[in-house]
Length: 385
Image (cartoon, rainbow, N blue to C red; front, side, top):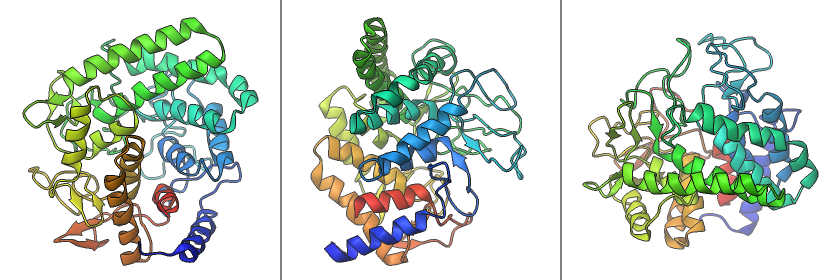
């Protein structure tokens, strides 16, 4: 649809050329222009995942630099903890020029989990045992972070709570310095538990390679317990969907969002019936548009189609959801997302960080101007092509 073989080939070359502006000399991709021209844990990992089939060296370089700056001490101002993977680092500055938190800054709840997932995906692709062996301690430190710092109250869920007055209030991919998600901390986001589950399973597989059977047993036991508890605590029986999060009182933040779509590639959803209900809900009229799935349902009170996270459409968010659909055999739904993102590119002539869909029409006339170039949007487009 939209592009024939030769057009796709030309477009892919154009994307690779554009991405050279975001590729660091160390081999990883910086997040985007103009506001995010630096290393981001979450963004750089996801871009490396998007290019894993064609450019596995990007994943290796990304894992290398993130291992180098893996947290070593407890530092509240940086939100650093032993084993934690950074959120953001600009090598040119000591601190953020606008928000003044020091670099490297570690206020990300999911970068450590995604780091572990990418490590396993990279190993499956390349069988690079030398790299795995040389970074096994980094993997073990990341696992230790999950157990000791990510899950401070030992309820199996990974939570976050801002430690620095200059830091991010929300620390998942829908991050913000304000409480735009309306969740009292500590916050256990829905997709983060899925990332944790997949990370545990993937590293258990790597531990089998290392013949560390005690570690295999420990990780698989935690994963099994997490899966059971997650499906009990996050499922909204009245809405037949997963809650956005649990708040500091372990109460559900009831909202229909795109976040549970990320669960599809992780394997944490226990019953096939729940998987089918999640997929169906993502493609309902209040969520799905001709240009992709919204971040936030049009039926929610705080919905705004032009907002950053409460109703706009993000290509990378759609790409992650699409990976789960593909993995689970939902070919028709996968193609719906793929065609929607290609339609957005064709309509705009480029694919920015995010965009609004108002009355069925795409717009980039938004209160917060979307970044372009944006690495994980271009990565999504590249893969869909």
